[in-house]
Amino acid sequence: MEQPQDTTLHITTLPLDALCHVFTFLTPAGLARMRQACKYFDLHRAQLYHDVCHLDFSPWRDKITSLHIQAITSFTPCLKTLDLTACYRLAPHLVLNNLLPTCHSSLHTLSLRSCTDVDLPSILVPFPQLLDLDLSYGKWVDNLSCVYLSTVFPNTQTLSIRSCFRLTDQGIRTICESLPKIDNLCIHGCWKLTNGSLQHVAKYLPGLTSLDIESMHRCTLTGINTLATCTKLTSLNLRECGIKDAALSVLGSSLPDLRVLNLKLNYLITNDGLKSVASPQLVHLDIQECPNINDYGLKIISACTALEYIDLRSCHEISDVGVEELTTHCTRLSTLQLKDCAKITNKSLWSIAQLPNLSVLNVQSCKELTDDGFAAFKHHRCSRLTVLNLGECTAVTDRAIKHIANIQLVSETQPRLIPRHLSEANAASFAPSLISLTVHGSQITDRGLRRYILRKCVNLYSLNLRNCTNLSLVNSSQALAVQSARRGRAATTTLANTLDNNNDGNMPALVPDSTPVVGLWLPRNKRKQPHASNEDTPTTSTAPAATNGSTTDYPTMTTTTTTTTATTTNTKADSDYETNQAEPDYTAGSVARLQAEVDAWNAEIHAALPRLSRVSVSSFSLRKVTFTT
Image (cartoon, rainbow, N blue to C red; front, side):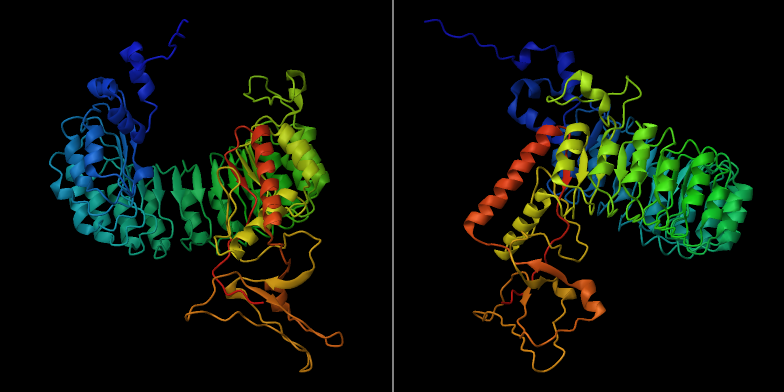
């Protein structure tokens, strides 16, 4: 009997050049495993490592050491980018010294973000080609260490020293004097800095093009005035700096090339301040949570005809009039953030849908929006839309999802993925570019999920279904999570790869309707004890006796029993915290049924959406509290 031929492709049969190209796609962990497991790889490691240009060790920050990095970087003469973010088990200065024989002249980008114990004086030879340096969150960064930056990294052009709390104005002066080539500087969150730092920046860095001074609370009009000499600035981040209209007036008259401006959380600026900075070349504008901006402010912004990104979240005075004015003149808009703009209605959606380049739209918590408004996206064929957030739009139902899913493909050259259950002829009705969809808190049902999202939004990477109480998937997942918490485990349920557990403090009522309501699910820090309107109302709340002086770690369920003649009074404050919750069935059969339902949905979703990497169906995580019966 003939033996079957071995059809395995051995690595030694591939040309060395082909292997070199393949191994450039491996992670540092993959390279290390290949060296350990493959003798051929270890024999030719010098040639195979030769073309590696980028190394990111941050995913293994709790395991990687200097010896591991030395084993890999000793054969990488073309290394250009090295990321050591939060690698606390290694000494970065020793790593840099190990790079000297091979790639000290080729390294362009270095991240020492959140690293500890960096001893700059111990670095033997400078890195002349290094242009991008990130020292953010470095507790070791102080005025003294700034003296050695120019010695080790003399040609740095981009420097980030975000949240380096030990830095003062003297350290900024040292940096600006010794590194005059810097054109991109981030001093975000250095809370000891004052107007003096801005004066040093303006004096020694006249060629600065990007400046980030977010959360610089000691910045005043005096410091802003000094930036008038930095006439080449194209990007400026003034988030949460407490500036007023007078500061914007100075910037608008002295920074003609400004293209990116962040004014988020500056509560004192008004429409008059926007007049100074609204210029035709402005591309990116963030005025989130600026409560004094209204429709007249949007009329001023409409003069920025090149605008591509605008963030208007929590600007509560904005209405349909302002949105229509903005979308009519700023036709290049690709990103529009309107979260918590409660005054906008369906009329705004019809204006927004006419934007030809719209790719990101956030209308979360805009309660006035209904299904009729989202029909505009089907009518105008917004085929470039990639990210859509309509969470907490409580009037949205399956009909709105149908309109979104039926966006037709305009450009036939646009890449798309056609699922197996549909033919090429039926692919014209897909939402081809939509990769992220958020519908949490809406009225979408199982029919809408299956028929419109799973069948037509086939390129989705992220899907958020939290608090969609009409979905059996969400109900089963929440009930299963409650059951897991009842057994003392973490109140989380994993669907596919990732499950989002952002806790808003409330326990949603997501259990089978057939179970009678007998109690209240409450987090510990917001628990309110029920109180009766008269003394004759008996209330029972007994806890199981603790054994060995310990308390039972279970979620809280408070059960109240009252007579038929008694009345119970709950205050408005209580109603804000308490959520009626049906008592789950904790039998083994019920748990198996819930798990089977979740698994079935899991398989169905990932079969229909092969690119999906993130699904969110749960919105709470229980704290350790005492279970009361």
